[in-house]
Amino acid sequence: MRIIRACRDLNISPVAVYSEVDAAALHVKLADEAVCIGPAPSTQSYLNIAAIIAAAAQTNAEAIHPGYGFLAENAEFARAVGAAGLVFIGPDPTAMEVMGSKTSARQAAVAAGVEVVPGTVAALTSFAEASATAEKFGYPVMLKASAGGGGKGMRLVASPAELRSAFDNARSEAESAFGDSALYLEKAIERPRHIEIQVFADKHGDVVHLGERECSIQRRHQKVVEECPSPINDQSLRERMGTAAVKIARAVNYTGAGTVEFLLADATREFYFLEMNTRLQVEHPVTELVTGIDLVREQITVAAGAALSFKQEDVKWSGHAIECRVYAEDPENNFFPSPGRITSLQTPAGPGVRDDSGVDETSEVSIYYDPMISKLAAWGRDRSEAIDRLRRALDEYHVGGIKTTLPFFRKIVCDQEFIKGNLDTGFITRFQGRLKSAPDPDEPSLSQQRDIVLIAAAIHYAQAQTYKSSNSNGQMQNRWKLSGREASLNAREALDGAPRRGDKRK
Ligand code: MV4
Image (cartoon, rainbow, N blue to C red; front, side):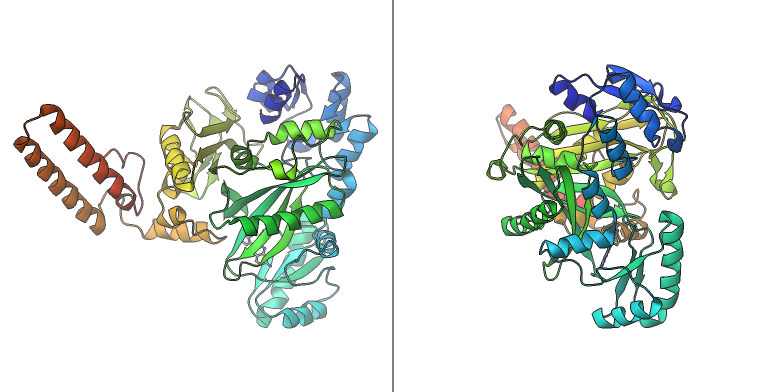
C-alpha cells in the first residue's frame, strides 16, 4: 500500500503481486494491475523468485520494490532482478551480503572506524576460544549467530559455569535456523537502548542520514513502539551517531535507504554498531513525519539514477512522532495470533494522525503471514502532544471480528515510565510486570480514590461559587474552566496503574 502510494505520486503505474489467499487483499485492489504468483505458503509465492520475475516480465515492469520482509534483504533475489534487466529498488547485492553476515558487518564497521560492541570480529573456532574471549572481555557476555540477527541463536551468558551449555545450544539453534552454526561473542551491554539511524545514499556518491529512531520497546525481538526523535536524543548524540552511520554506509558503497542499528549504554551514553538493515523498515513513517521526506519516493527516484532530492544540511527535524504496530494478536492470551474476518473497522484520523493500514472492513487476516494489520503513528510539536494525539487515535480505533493489540497500546500510552521516556530493551518485561501487579482496574487505587475525593470537593466548591455569582454566562465558564483544569491536572495520575478503554470517560 505504501509503495503503491509513492508510485502514484510519481506517476508510475504500480503492479501488485499476490498469493492465492490474498486475491481480495487491499494492495491488489489499489494497484493498476495484479499478478498471482502462487499458493498461500510464502515459499511458493512471496519467496518465489522466478514467479516474481515472471510477473514483472509479463506486465512489462521496469523495476521491483521488495518491500520490508520476504526477499527484501535477499542478495540472490537482487541479483536475479538485475540479471532479468530490471532495476532492484534497493542497494547493491554485495552490500546486502556484507551486512547479511553479522561478523563481516562488524569487520566493515571496524574498518570504517566505528565502535562495535567489544568482542570477536571473526567467528569463534572452538569452545576453548569462546571461553578465553569471554574471560578477556569479562562476563556477562552475549553469544550470537554469525548468520543471525533478530535475536535467533543469541544467548546471554552470566558466568563461566553457563558458557558450555549456552555455547552448545546457540550453535544448534543457529544451525537449524540458518544452516550455519558459526557463533561470535560480545560483551553484554546491560539495559541497552536500541537506537537506529536512517541513512540514504544515491548513485552519485552522496550519503546522508535522517536522524535516529528509538526502537527499545520490543517484545521477543519484535518492535512494538517506535519513535523519532529518541526521548534521550540531543543534537550532539544525533550528529555523532549519524556520522558513524554514514561512514558505515560509505564503507560498503551503499545506495538507497538503509538503517544502521546501535546499542546505546544508558549509563555512559556510549554507542556501538550492532547491525545494518539493507532495506526500508516498517517504522520509517516516524522519520517521514519528523523530516517531511517521502522515503519510498526517494528510494524509487534514487534507484532510477536521480540524485538525492535534498542535501544533509536540508534535513530538518520538526516535532515528535510515535508509531504503534497494530497486530491481529490477542494481548490477553500471550499475543497469540488472532486470524479471521474483520467485521467492522473504524480508523482514526484528525490532526497529527497517520494510519498506514493494510486492511479494510471486509479483509480477512490469514494464518499465513505476519499478522500486522496497520501502523498507527501520531505526530505532535513535542513528545507530550504526540502522546496525547496517539491516545486519542487509539481510543478512536475500532477493529471488529478479530483481537488486536490496540488495548495493549492504550495501556502503554498511559504508563508513567513510557510517558517519562524511560525506555530500554527491558521495558516491555517490566511493563507487563506492572500490569500484573496492578490492582483490578475496576477498583480505584488509593491514589485514585484520593483524586476522586479531591475532584468531588473541587466540583462542590465550584458549584457553591457559581450560586454566589450573578452572571449566568460567567457561571458556566467558571465551572467549565475549573473542571477542565482539574481533569488535565489529574488525568495522567488518575490513569496510573492499569487504565482501560473508557476509563477516561468515567
Ligand atoms: C545485545 C544486547 C546486549 N549486549 N548485544 C537482540 C537482538 C539483536 N539484534 C541484538 N540484541 C541484543 N544484543 C550485546 N552485546 C541486547 C540485545 C537485546 C535487544 C536489543 C535490541 C532490542 C531489544 C533487545 C532485547 C533483548 C536483548
